[in-house]
Structures are given as C-alpha cells and as structure tokens.
Image (cartoon, rainbow, N blue to C red; front, top):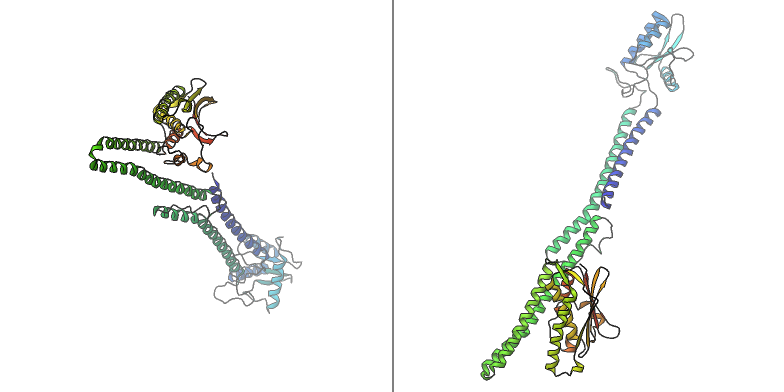
Length: 468
C-alpha cells in the first residue's frame, strides 16, 4: 500500500469522524435540552379527564381508592401529592413540576378545567395537589377543540430541539461534502496535468511539465515525473535519429560526389579509365562498409538483447584480432615507407583462457573496432597493448595506445555515432561508428566499456564482461 492509499484512507476517515461527531453531538444536545428544558404540565383533554377521575375517586372512595387508581393508570401519568407534598405512591417528583403546578393554580381563579393541575379535597377536608406532566413529543396545550393555552410558550421546545438537530446534521453533511470536494480536487489536479501532457506529447511537444510544477510526493506525482523522464528520453532518441540521418546523409554524399566526379572524368579523359575505375571501386567499398556498419548499429539498437549465446574464449578471439591488426599495420607501414624501427607494434598480454557467454561474431566486431581504433589513432610508431585478465566474476580487456589521447570534453562523446574527435588532427579515414558499435555490443552482453586518458600519454579503453 502506497502513499496514495493512505491519503484516501485518512481523508475518508476524517470525513466519517466529522460526521459521527456531528451526529453524536446532535443527540447529546437533544439529551441536554431534555434535561434542561423547563418542566411543563399537560393541559389537554386527556389530562383533564385524568384529573376529573382522580377527583371523583377521592370524593367517593377516599385516599385508598385514589391510590389504586394511580397504580393502575399508565397514560397519562398522574401525580397526587398530599399536604406534605409527598406523592401517594411514593414516587420522586421533580420540584420544578410542583412549582409549575402551584404557579398555574395561583393564576387560575378556581383551578378551572383545562389546566394541568388541580386541587383535590376529601369530604373530611384533606387537601391534595394533582397534576399531569406533559409527555415528550406531545405539543403543549394540545386539546380537542380549544385554542392554545395563553400560559404556554408560542414555540414547542421539542420543535426547537428538532430544528437544532437538523441544523447540526446538515452541517455534518456539508462538512463531508467539503472534504469530498477537496479530495476530488487534490487527485484530479495532477490527472488533468497528466492529460494535458499527453495531449502535448501527441502534438509533438515533449518538454518536461511535472518536475518544475509539483513538489508533491505521491504516486500520481511520481507518475508525472516518470512521464517527464519518458518524454525526455523520447526527445533524446528523436534528436539522435535526426542527427543520425543528417550524419548518414553527409557521409554518403562525400563518396557519391567523388564517384560522380570520377565518372565525369572518365567521360572527359577516356585514356585514364583504369585509374577512374579504381577510384570508383574505392568509393563504393567505403559506401559498402558504411552501410554495413549502419546495419549492425541499427540491429543492435533494435534488439538490445543478444539472441545467440555460446561460450567464447576471449584470449583466442583477441589473438586472432591482434594477428590481423599486425598484418594490416605492417602493410600500412610498407606502403608509407616507414622503417621497421618506427613501425606500430601491437602486443597482447593474457593470463590464460578467459571465457564468456555471448555472440562470437558481435564480440569479434566490438574488440576489433577498439583495437583498430587504437592502431589508427595511436601515435605512429607507438605500441598498442591488448591486456586480458580476470577480475572476480568479470573478464577485463584493456586496450592501451600511445596516441594523443582525447580531450576531456570529448571523452563522454566518443561512443556516439559519427563522432571523430581525432580525425582532424590525424587525418585518419573513418566514419566514427566503430566505438558506437563496440559499446552497443558490450552493453548487449551485460558488460561495460569506458575510455580514459592515460597519465603518461595515450588512451585506455576498458571492456568488462560477465564471465561464463
């Protein structure tokens, strides 16, 4: 369960607690109002009938008969107090009711009917106070056909309590709606922003939108920041594809222009057709090599995982690559007339057999590109060393040369397609795809490749691969 769950849970819990407290408060206020309400007497027809029955019973049957009547009577509730103000059944009588009965009798001239209290007397002269308290929920002064009692208040306290309860419950409902509205606004705001970002991305605008706009820490904000990273990555890939298309067009234009010039020269000077065909063949080979490297790079980017896996002896692989590189370096030195003392030397250092799992053709291409790059761009007449060793669970290959190295600002870019930092200084031919292919191959095998300048001059390229 994440942060978003707890925000939902706590918000809903807070709303429920608010509603519960409000409703509980309404009932509490109702009970308090009942306890603090001024006691009133029932002056309706049932009360008058009960008082008449009590008077007749006392007059004809005496106090014992009246006690029996009070014991049998349940509704309405009738109290009869003797001269000492004690109830004939021994019940506890609130003093407020007694005072209210006395007040009503004092206002009436003869204790007339339709009052809630009456004085009763026996033939022997004993005096009693009888009254009927109003039952909860019964409107004060209710009667069969008469008007309201002038001594009762205009608004029933029970009605006032009911109005108060409705107000409190309404306030609780409004508070719940407020919490719900705040919760909906809180969660809909990032969703609206995310929808706007999707619409902008569909229109081609991949600029980040969530990072600067929100500092929240929940799943929706994390989703927005993930979308920013995704759009940034897509924009980088699109920019890379555009740069790649531009570079490919530029690389193909140069040999095509030279081939067109050679064809024109052949038309103008038929006697030089042999040299012209040689130039056309050389340029077509350059184009074929470029297209092959582009196809390899495209395949590696489209399928980042190596489909072919088998044991590969890196020591044996490196021996073959170094032998080919020595042969090409010797042929290059002979063509340039370089003396043997200044010839480029390519050495290999290995601690024994080092085996990895992978595609032998791709690994050959990667290591060959790194070694050829060192032989071409290293100092002429220098030493190129290919060192293999085991580093724990990793197989490590170091390719070291004595060339001018790479500028610090360019070290991070040498593995990008068509990057040729030293081409302008050394005049070495190439397309700048070798190290880019090597990086894709090594990463596809779960390894890593890095380059750094050597302290005593030259470049060191280190390849690490998981051992078999």
